[in-house]
Image (cartoon, rainbow, N blue to C red):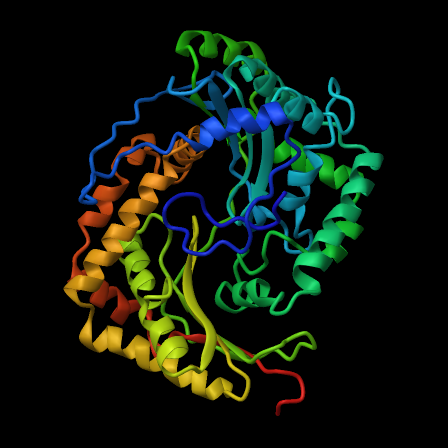
Length: 469
């Protein structure tokens, strides 16, 4: 399971790590190769987008659970995706890490599933499963042969209604989560980067901590606090169930009603209120950490929300600036100046806040000030000169391929449909995402560069090599 997951969909330019596959049988590998092979040919030979209409049905159960169904019979596989609208931003400041903790805890078992058996049930049926946590959501997916759909629905209904939250499970997962934090964050070079970025840019909001949370608060939490969190957030009216694959729509509706229809509706959870403003002065911070092998600098700016009208323009702009080896920053800092071993940029556009960031890891002997100057120069060129036609078309082509890939498997379709419904209130956006990018102009990109990449609003994090100063 993954501690951090950035927002699903086509706007994610940076993934800290891939979700590892859980245990698979040989049968499962064969079935799931078929899933992976469903990347549909929706790009013509010239790279021109050929429209693909992903048909779906959606409805609400009386208890508030939103259900999305998509039928595709190209392979005998099915994917279920359960999205809960709760992430780290919904936590108390003195109890951070709860959302991620539950991502782990929900694999413990239920009143009707013995401890540690969920993974075995799925792998034994030829499938795989996993989960992730972000600032805004916690989600669970299961991929199976299509004749095993009922198994997936039973497991998800058990997690929703009958999850076991006892001392044994909580203490087990406390240690798992603490070890994950130590291995992935505390004992890694630049491991504090995400937390320091969030603390700087999202200061005074509940985005100021990351989903991994604080070991201290997880240790301090009582069993009743964990149970209260479950009762508050794991309710059908705070969830979306998305199913895609080789299904019979009417039979699937009957199965959904059988397993989820009797689950009582919960109280509507209170939502955190964030007054997000872009015009905030930035800060500069030096992070002296013993494991830093090379000098690094990170430039971060506040950005609009995920659903803002300029989100697509920001995405394309950051891609041109520093996404990939042919981007401006990489060519300048790595290929031409030989000042950096790596350089990139990414966006975190969230439900109620957002940021964009660019970083460079320097070569030995290069100062952080040199790296800062080179990044500043490339950013200023974007503001002063805009982008070329060639750069613009290349960015659009890359986005076209990215969107095609994002809906090529049943698992990705199930996730994307839930994503668009949750954040945009429009499941059908899965068929319109490319259009929203094609409506962006070169002038839009220069405008958002001028509005977002403001020098005085830039937050700067420096990672010097120990003993270099």
